[in-house]
Image (cartoon, rainbow, N blue to C red; front, side, top):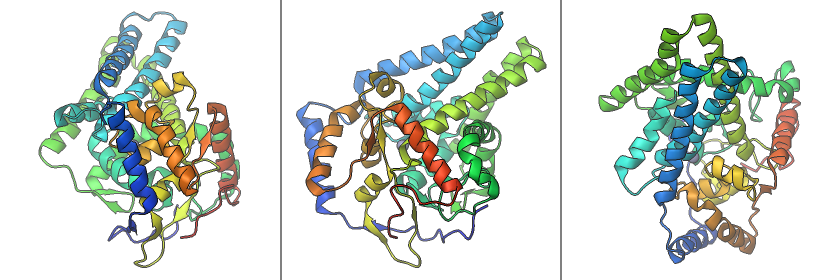
Length: 372
Ligand SMILES: [Zn+2]
């Protein structure tokens, strides 16, 4: 359980825009224009969407209709989990940030894919686009740091004796968090009109209709249809296993960008003081890229291994991140701003392990705590 949360109203502001931010923005715009690129994903993201949807639907139909041996069931489950995660990484995330297409309708449709696979695009918008993207790694504001009392992911969260072992058991907790998200968290956020301590306007009319229809559709394909075709003692364990695996995949990928030893964790300044740094500088202080030269990871993760570029320019599609990354790095170098990167997935996993271990034992991260 957290200790006293900071006030949530009004939301704190960052310092005004710096020369660094102006130059960064201009350099990235020039790179996108010069290469005749659009901010959005174009045909490449449309093709990718077809591939990941065909992957997930193919795995699902094989699982519920034709898989008769245990090894084929396990194979289809794994393919389904990775396919659903790929929809989240590559389609929903860009749609939610309006970078999927220049057409609003296509972005909305892509964002709604989250409702089909068990989440709520409405709650996600407030939790991810507003709280996480504005205040990454700021305790009490970034909801991605909230897994108390099971995990301690920020300095001001209370430390319990069992956190000493959190680097061993966190991976299982991530699986449980996904099941909790699908079955409980979205409903609780809508009923309370809050995410954590932060107000969220309750969905109304069309938003509420999409919320309810999305949940019905998800429970329809994930539980009701399999229960018509198979006994409950087969369906329920397989559902829990799939949802758990999905949670581990999603949480680990997101944690590798922020909850790592090289990223900084902050607390909000007290009173009405502004955050003592610019918005762009804060994103670079709290975000780490990983495995940028791994073409399979870059394709599959939908740019979530390029989180620096994503946090600086969330309205640019992930398709363009490898193009703008060298530009971002060059501007950072010119201004002496740290551009943090881990070369491999294994290195990033080890860094997350160290993050959990240090927080669980009450130690500072390697990056230390930025002044607030
Ligand atoms: Zn995002």
